[in-house]
Length: 246
Ligand code: CA
Image 1 (cartoon, protein in one colour):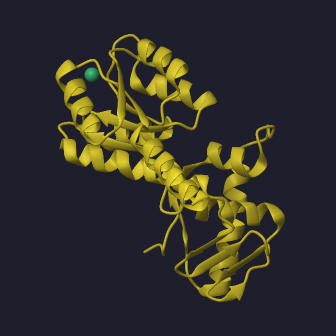
Image 2: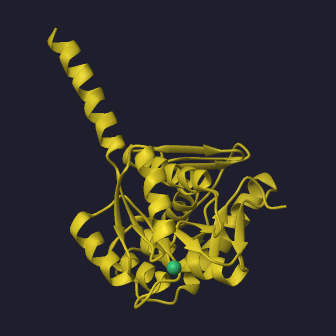
C-alpha cells in the first residue's frame, strides 16, 4: 500500500504545483489588467498585479513569478527598460503587450528579452494560450534532455554526436555546443548575447561577432552533409534553428 500512497502523493503534488504557477501582470490600464487577471485566474494560475514598472520590479523580486505579462507602455519605467533589467538577473518568461503591430516594436520587444509578444487589442483566449505555451516550455526544460532530433538533424549529448541527413558532422566542441543550444530552442530566435552566454559562458568579453563566425561554420557543415540550410538569420535579432530555410 505504501507504493500506492507514494504514486498518488507525487501526482497530487505535481498538479498542485502546475495549478499554482505564479504570473505577474504589469499593466497600468485597469480594465486590461483586470481582464488578464480574470482570464488567468480562471485557468488556475495565481495572479499578482502591478500598475507601474517600478512596482512590478518590486513584486518580481519579492514573489519570483514564473511568468510576466508586461505592457510596453507604462509610466515611470516602460516595459522595454523593465525587460532589460529583468534579463540582467533572470530567465523569467516575459509575454510583452504592445500597442502597435509595427515591426520595430516587435523586434525591439524581442531584443529586450521578451519571449513572446501580443498586439493590442488582443483576444484574452489567445493571451491565455500564449501563456500556457511559454509555461509548458518551462516545464519541459526541467526534464534533463540528452538527445534532440528535428527533421534532418539529430544531436546526442551523451555520445557527443551530431548528424544531418544521416551523416555524422565533424564539429569542434564549441560548434557542437552551439548546435545543441540552437536545436534546444528550435524555432525560436536567439540573440547573439544569449548565444554568447550559453555557448562561451558568462566570462567571455570578446566581440559578439564570434557568434556569426561559428554559426557560419556550423551552417556550412550541415549544408555539406544534407544540402539543406537549417540555421536562419533573423536580421537585427539573431539566429533561429528551423526545419529548412526557404
Ligand atoms: Ca499601458
